[in-house]
Image (cartoon, rainbow, N blue to C red; front, side):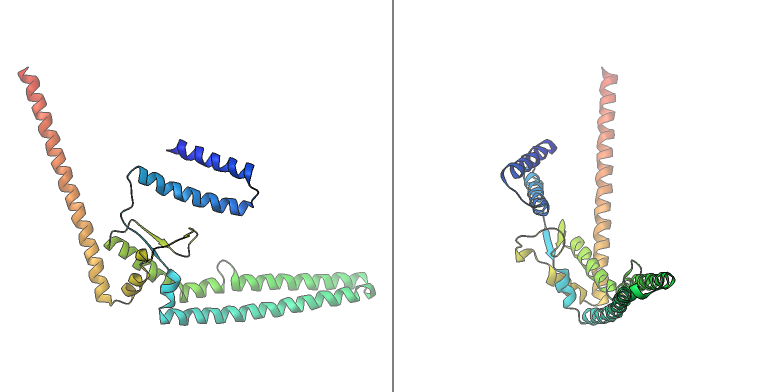
Length: 247
């Protein structure tokens, strides 16, 4: 199968290089769709069809949770304030540079160095403030983790539980990097996820208990099957040894 895929991709490369002039991004986009199609095509050919596939629109689910909207609004408000503060600082920096350029011909060498140092120091201060607000572990990161992430985790956990309960093989996120050119709404489980989130704690605990019982049942059946196979192997081995002795 790898050889077949390799030949097809090579053929695709040659066709585009010889017959079309396209941007690298468009080419990668087409190649992604092509590989995605090959994946499902070869799986179908090998009779490895997925039993259950679904997709969920996480943004839609989150938008239906009132408390999430409040959390997102608070996050947006804080972000706007921080951006305004930075805009003000950048404007002041721009004014400093403009004034310096206008006055530079009239300044002594010492004053020029002093003003340049002043501008550089303020640039460093802006960078520090920007990192404080929007750095990898800045205020935005911490506030998002505090206000928004718990709701996102709630949705992801609900999807995981539904997948286990209803035996889904794959569940895609509608706004993810996977290109979904067409979706059949029969496979949309967004409303199902929303209903699950809105259930009571008791209902959720009951469903999770059902999952644990199902996992335990499958493990028990697997052990029984392994024991049966072991007994059968032992029986065949004894029969073979008995035949050897008789011969």
